[in-house]
Length: 236
Image 1 (cartoon, rainbow, N blue to C red):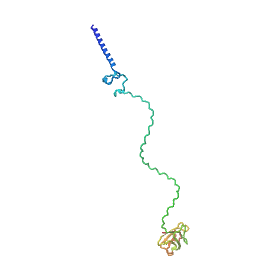
Image 2: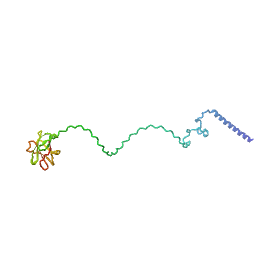
Image 3: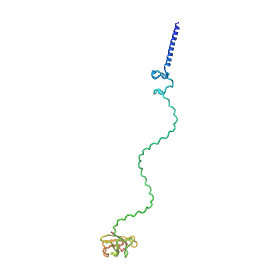
Image 4: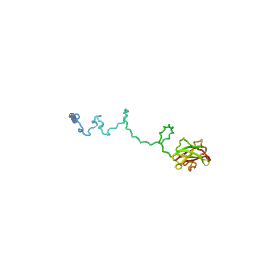
């Protein structure tokens, strides 16, 4: 009998517990509305993995380092070629380099054509020669007209000392041995009247056979003998 009562008592307690559990679930289902449970109504650390629906959590729901790092994925396909970029700005000019060594002198070029004749220059200053002439020293001397004589009036020949020829030359314009100097030189261009070794000298002391104021010129060859050499005289 005790055994039977014990069994009935246990069954009664289980029935009561079942009723309480069913009534609580029904209350929760009837009392809570959709989306009415918030973080403030959930006790911290009360939810476990069993309470979370699989596949509903996102990456941002986890702290850094909680999710394992995935392996390196395969390389993607190469992208299409991009458009050319715009031209860059010009750079600053560099400094000039050092001058190179001088090259070798080139060959002399051909002579150029002769240029046109230049304009006639201005007339030069008047020279210091005050008289001149070419004298033919023949038996009868004469003043050559080519080239023209200047300020020589006359020439005569007289017998000299020791076979020398003496020529008396009279200048115009008041020129005398007292106020001017005569120079004389053989005229080697006159081959018909010149021999070898002719000498022409101006005698500053004069000669009594010549007229007063005349210039005296003596001519002779290398042996000191008579010479009818032609000569040129100038008075300065």
